[in-house]
Length: 614
Image (cartoon, rainbow, N blue to C red; front, side):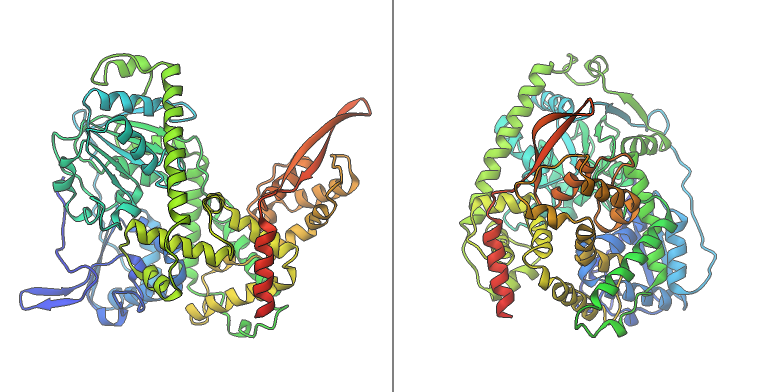
């Protein structure tokens, strides 16, 4: 497969007598305040080329990296399409999974109806070109990892595609790198993820533009989704296999594309979670339902903001770019549907591409992995998992300690560091430590780093504003709304606006009287309690709204105790079973709320002190 390269300048506008004026950038930089200083008015009647259009649009509409500047990005994108498609310019788009969603969206932005010229590639691989994809059907990737280990031990050179990079992720790039380095100290291993690509002292730094020259120097390559699109690895005769673990983070098409980055027809070994755990909005697979739920939540958030002295609501524009909001919903429901049937969605996509899906049984693999021996025994697989877990724990503790003992930097240093695209490991730790100090206002320890990684801050925020900090909730949401409006110059993108505010979530918890349950520390709870039954009836009657606002999905037959437990989990509390009793010839379990002894009230005191001084 050949690769089309435009050879235009990336991010910096330059022109010479022999070169056309051009700029290359990611959609994150498509706004005036970026390093590209992008002004759509300067590019009228030009040629716009968008590769992987479906993922570019989805990234622009939904990614966290675009959130702060999303309104300006979408405003620039619309102006660009109006100036190009509304004039004499041209837009070239390409995607292996191109759909009408992208085409309709670009035309809606431009405000013109054009007949697109579509070149459809109907080619499907023949027997010689089709991949053999060995699918591991288990609920965990333990056996795949064991077979990967055996493959490397016997001289294999794999390309491994992973969906996570965090050091705490059991099957992520950093954990697997640490384990494989310990097992194979003489082999050269390259880890490619967003962190290593931004680390000037890491061998992966700057490698994206020359992968075909860099990768042959390594025996094992571990890659995160940072190289799933726009990359063509054309090396022949180096890699012996491609392996992938899809835990349910990426969309189904992204997983398929990551498998195809290596163009050579070598065996693929794949483990996919049965269902994904990422969902957009309330997880709905209905466009109308998703749009309506987001709009209702926006109106609720606005009504709650009206309780404050915030005077910017009269200028708030909730109808910003209806075409972008609709496109977001179309792509979101497709994403949610893929997550619901994650494994089957990915396998079916690979089948439609013409590849052969083969169940990776030990007998089948004995004839395909180089040693032609049976897969590892269950005992060996469990030993391997335990070894990986040990390495993860050791490395993670070392990293947490390194963050806790990093140099304390000033606010000015932090602001400069935050803007930098490339940072050393030392700088990344210094930035993280400063951000932890901003969050908690208490001494930074390795234990605090661990708790923050586990989502402690989100739990504390809800608990604080639901209890001791309740009087500051309206002001908190008003301040965030003010910032959103300033960044968007009076406009909001509805999904981002809803994600940032806490008032509605806490309102639901108060409606269900969760704060009252926290006050009585000695109370015993059971399913037949009248107030808990009322709580359950209210929650089940409003299941859809609760899913939209709080993100908790409740089954129609959820018991009162189950519902209470789900809400307590949002703030880091739990229930313990004290005993069982007989009630009307049935066994009844008695519970009590467990108060977490995790130091959160020290943080609350710091937050209260800061609020009092404002």
